[in-house]
Image (cartoon, rainbow, N blue to C red; front, side):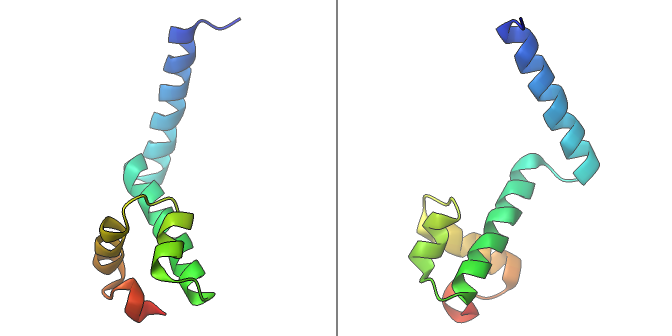
Length: 79
């Protein structure tokens, strides 16, 4: 049986190990993966709102801003 505090420490250690292996913070990694998925959905014909929400973004405006920062164009122009 694992106590709650010990389990949290194990999870933290696992996350820290993954972050060190990737060389980027976990949040940045997850955002990048979500953006990649949204780009794929857009190429398959999803509209911007669908792609944002299905990729895990709750705020479409924030998604558009992140997308433009990463790819240099808005998702509307990326299709």
